[in-house]
Length: 529
Image (cartoon, rainbow, N blue to C red; front, side):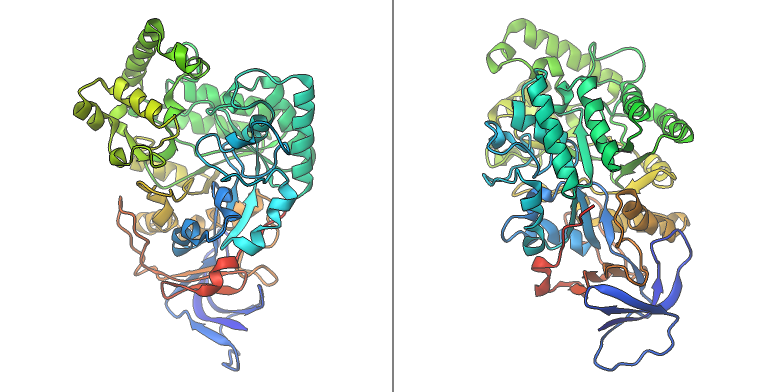
């Protein structure tokens, strides 16, 4: 038995904490009391006097499924554990590690250039999930990526699927959902999801609705103007059009909808934050089951091609070099930058997959000056020389006031959208995103229990996780213990926070006084929904 003694318990609900003891046997919480009747016996006692006890944090939007079944994978998960994360909702933005056409001719493209299975076959969702208890340090819950399925059937191509391919897509998704996948994710800003017609998207939504699971949307645009639309400027703000599209599909199909990483790229996009939230609030009033997730950062990670227009991406490399193609791209880019309040100085190269390591950590604007060329030329040079596989950090996604508004919104959940790169500059959300949410609550005087609810109980309920997210008798013993007086981190630095004292995953103490324990390597489980 493990006893957490005399801690301030936040039970995962949006209710005030209380002082008490938590008794754990094997992997479950068996008893909670107000401090009476605690005997030392043979139990391992963790003195939590003056410490806060919370449910293990659930990362509502992760991509770590691509690392979960790998050997020797602790390096991908350790920074998350050190910030209190015990479970991750994976398979987002249209890309999942598992659940696609077996022996598909394009399976080597799975991951869309951002991730990779390193040649391993995870086409069977069922077989993949059975590897998780042997391999993963944290608990894994996974969506099936629509883009992953589409790649296996039709590559990254922009062509529409024929009837046989659509039927096969339906079979693959239906099977994975029957085997325990938590839902499906769409990546409407990425290849190949951006090419899917409305009829295909509604078909996918219908399958998810049948299983009563979640359909998550990386929407088509997250800024005032965007290359996802033709023309790329003018009319209603593109970020609002993209939310309109999500709500339209949700209303028509009745599917449980999660809007991924609600952000507002570029200073000119910040003017419609309230309107975007009103769209979601009104949809909720109209009985649309919709929420959104967000991080505590003003930047985010993506692939370098995310800002390129669909018409350009659909061209062959040879045609991209044409004079009029270059001219059109230059004109559209210049206009978009001006109308967006976002430029190449806001794009940092974070990872070039070993192809151009000397430019990692550098802004496109810096490289343009060094190479004596325009910013657009420098950007396309990086695209070409990294075979469009470079990762980037993109800034001006929000400002402190927007982050504050979103984190307090009743429809928001908390997440990182971060992963550990093999090399290069890391996304700082890897290290301190969740402690930052707690710190923001404490500094602003808003209830800490509300912040903890959004990173535990509310996320568990959203994704139909029945036995985690709350500190209650009978629940799994996923627990994070922190010292609110010592909770601290340094912005913009790749360092784990201070103040996270203990982390328990399935009843195992995997972090103790800031030290990772050897039992962590296979502490996680697959959360089947």
